[in-house]
Every structure is written in C-alpha cells, then in structure tokens.
View 1 (cartoon, one colour):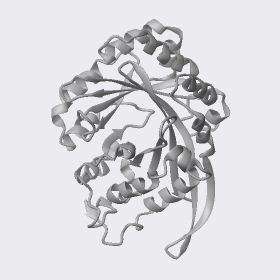
View 2 (cartoon, rainbow, N blue to C red):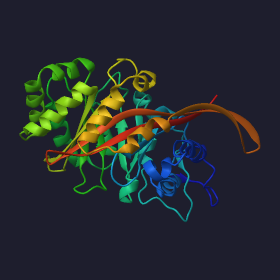
View 3 (cartoon, rainbow, N blue to C red):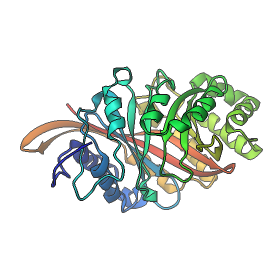
View 4 (tube, rainbow, N blue to C red):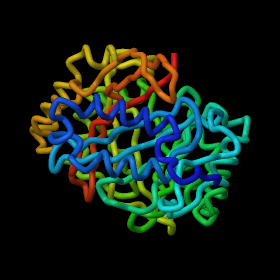
Length: 354
C-alpha cells in the first residue's frame, strides 16, 4: 500500500473529520464519563496507520454502557469510494503491523461489490496490534456471496469450508450476511452475522419456543432458560435485527453471542434515527439493561453526543462547507457462557462536503 511522506499525519481528510466529530461528540464531559480519557490518542494512532484515501468514510463509536469508560472504533468505506491506487496515511515512524493493501485493492476494483461496505474494527480498549477486517453487503440485499473471495484475499481460505457450512445451516428466516476476520483476537475467530427482518423478530416476540429452537440450532448448544428469557425480552423492547457468533478455525463456536437491537417503529429507517430518538424504546431498553447490571447513568449521554450540523471550515487555505452527523445506530448485548456480560451503544459518525 502506498504511504504518505514524513509529516503526513494531517494530510488525509479522514483525520480532520474524525477530530472534528469526536471533539463534538465527546465534549461536555462525555470524554471522561463515556468515551475514556485516552481514547482520542489511541484512535488517531490507528487512523494514522490504516486510514485510506477515500471519500465518504464513516465511523462507528462502540461505547460500553457500564464499567470503565472506553471506546472501540470501526472505520468504514464504501468499496467503490476507495481511491486507486490505495494510499494510507502512514509515516516511516508509524508503519502498520500488517499491510492489507491487496485486499482493499481487490475490493476497490471489483464493480460487483461497489456498494458493499468494507473496513477495520479497532479494539482500542484491548490495545491489539491488528484490526479486524469486515466486508458487508447492502442491508437491502443481505448475502454471503462475497465471503469466499474475502477470506481467500485475506489468506484465510482454510476457514472457508466451516464458515460456509455454518451459513448454510442457518435457521429459516436467518439471512447470513456478514463475516468478520479477527486474526488478533484469542483463538483467531471468524465472526458470523445473521440478519433478521422485522417479520422474523415479531415471530420470536410471539413464540419463545421457536426462538429457543432456532438459537439452539445455530448456537450448537442448549440455550438455558435465563439466557432465552433475556433474548426474548430484547425482542419485546425493540427490533432484534442481528445475531452474531464467533467461529474458531476448527469449526467450533465460542460460547458467546451478540444480539443487536434497535427501534421497531420504521422498517425503512436504516439511514435515519429521528424515529429512534423520538420513541420510548431507548429509555425502556436502557432501564432493563440497568436492571441487568449492564448500564449505568452514562446511558443518557448517548443522546447528548448526537449532533447534526453544517458549518464552513478553513482548511489548506480554502473554505469548505461540511455536514457533520453523529447519531445512535444500534445497541448490542453480549452473552458469554450463557450470561449477559456487556451492553454497548453504537454511535454512527460521518462528515461530508456539501
């Protein structure tokens, strides 16, 4: 992957956009209480190593709702918006631990996945050297047709048979759509994501036995009553739209499950959070997560971090008009060894020229 020369740290707009958005989202005391005091420095360090020259990048801020304030970061691009040749903002003093250039080159050059989203998952709170890599189809056309090429391009073709076997065995109504390559995590799992439409969530809301059967089929272990009760409660509090499992290279599943939930008000509201923020769902969900010991008072700071603004900025001797957006995207509850152990709120952040 081509690199910028020394002194390049501020050359890519992605760094300027991140600083501007993060400063607004983490202002008002939220950095200390929600994001974590050392988060900005860690985030800028990984962006300097991995950020690419592209247009329209987006960020996801992953924020635990209890425990020590901290943040993990997703950096996301549309494949068709990555500029060729792939260039990252890295100086000789900050080389990336691994060069993913051939993978992103292939994504950028493939017209069949131009609308797909590709990016990095940075475990800032764990200080891991290598990011996770993911590739997503548009949510209106969930599929796993891209997964074989993705794993081959990442040098993980040995995982392919087990991954595709698991996708093929998904319960009826589960739409496999996501594989995340996480070579730096213990056991080097591949994360498998299954999309549920509103109809499927409503079926689970009305039929706990069906929920238990389908979860047990994919989880490959018995789902205990308390875990099942909690997942069923999540379907009652909002739209459970995503189940995520971690698969080890030998095909075994980790004893972990991620359940993503968002507002159920608007089936077409993927790109807006107006209905989400206006509904009672976030507060009802937060109260329940608080009762489970997974959320404390910081949950109220998520809305305060949201913003939508238009401003004129001076950069490189010229004035640009930009729009900055930070909005609540979804919540995720993480189960491990059948216990609910973590809840996160996800803020989507993006800046674009007008």
